[in-house]
Amino acid sequence: MHRRQRGSHLGLLLLASQLFQVGLDNIPPVTLAVLGLNVYLYLFPAAPLMQACVSVQQAYWFKDWRRLLLSPLHHADDWHLYFNMASFLWKGIKLEQRLGGPWFVYLLSVFSLLTGLVYLVLEALLTELTQDQSYSMTCAVGFSGVLFALKVLSNHYHPGGVTYVMGFPVSNRYASWAELVLIHIMSPGTSFIGHLAGILVGLLYTAGPLKAIMNKCAGFVTSNGYNSGPSAYYGSSGSSGYSGTRGGNSGNHQYAPDYTTNNTAPYTGGLTEEEQIEAAIRNSLNDRGQINQRGAPPPYGFHHSEEARAEEIRQRRLRRFDS
Image (cartoon, rainbow, N blue to C red; front, side, top):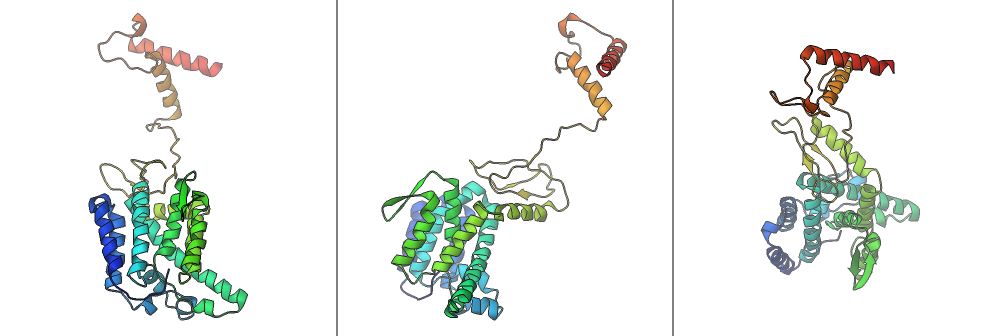
């Protein structure tokens, strides 16, 4: 998050150059669309910067809640846009490939909204603790709060990795905190509270209840009253996203990575318990469950008529219950 100031378009040129170096075909669709939206709203803002930034005064006191939607998508200048989008490019590629496009859209939407809300809460707390009204009037804008949340998530998936901050190796576990302090020291004009809000939102997802809540909300919205289970699921080592039923769309379910469903109930095929027992005994008589093809010789050289086989099944079942 940052405060705005128009400059040259050199940042836009550098961003365009970086996109073409990576190759537009190598950028997942959601990531590319978010990049395009941010660039478009920089060139053609939906509102003047002072009407798009978020603050306790404007959002809470004056009830201008639309700022929560506008502030992440507007930037102070082209360099602010460049640094945020260059960072989002790499995070977006990795996370969208891992999570899948539908879940990544969902994640970005929730993170954008929650980062603004947490920012307001933190600024309100500072105002109350210090009795300094300037905290409530500080207006922030930019995508960097969401980027810090995404960085926490990315580091969560690579807990043993190392990030180099100013040339010094820092464990991924603490990289977000190191960058938070470093950015504030090197660029005091940035919003420390906005970045901190992003880290807290990321932690709510990786170590708090946010992920479970999002899973429940996604399942409720997409179920449409049908019991449609996933037809495919990719664990945390691969891309995940949504799953649907084949042969008809009875509602798609979206799950975050590492979210597993418990499908351990045995398939009964509509048989009663007694019929299941009889079928199990019949299968055990037919060469350990392998049913012979019609006309093939019976297992072990024995042959039973249908009546004898049925009688044998009944006798075995009675002896089983007697024991």
